[in-house]
Image (tube, rainbow, N blue to C red):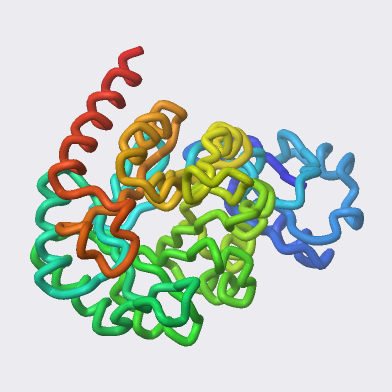
Length: 335
């Protein structure tokens, strides 16, 4: 249930209503706008008389929400959410370009890539320190050493860093990480999501390999329910019967998510296709579909990459793509 309060309601009256609602066993989440406050009720709202609430002097409208995701719902938070950390912005009209290698391999590699993507217009540096791999014999990442190398790249370039977490026990290593990524395999690791909900830093949540849009939103709800409102959703392709590409990029999820939720939506065409030459056209398509950002894999020597080289762009290819993306956004903005 959502309660929309009238403009400029005194804080005391709002607090009294919130206290009364909590006495009914409900969790109450406030969304305070410039002119109005929205109260989101979580729990068994059958205990509350909607007609009684509608009749209160300070209440403008009461609306029941049928969808199981409440806090992620656009009905609860009509304006787009802008997720911020340092100079990084995404959502609410702010476009983000996150770029870097699938995995951090060496200091020389990550610094070269960081310098290149920064020059091309990237707004954040992505790089895997811990890598989930299908084979136990494949390169698993540098772990804590990888995070240290990302921090060196951040110190030199000023780019905020985003890297994937595998286990809640690793959280102490992520204190200086700007954006924590939850990979597709962990999208429904609910205990991990609960821990991330206790943080107050951006979480990049990737859609699972075979999960629906609603399931993605329910996973986001775990983080939001914990009090962390800085969630970025990522469409990265789903598994279908098609074998030409690594996954099938579901671009229809972008407008669907933008309609259903206020959270920013970014697209990862690199993991979706697994083929570098397919990344630019799908990145442009995602931009045209209304994505708030792109997650692009870039490697200084893709042919020698320890992880996902075939889907990685060279710095030169990324620079060309970034230029086309920014021009397309300018065109769309003037359309």
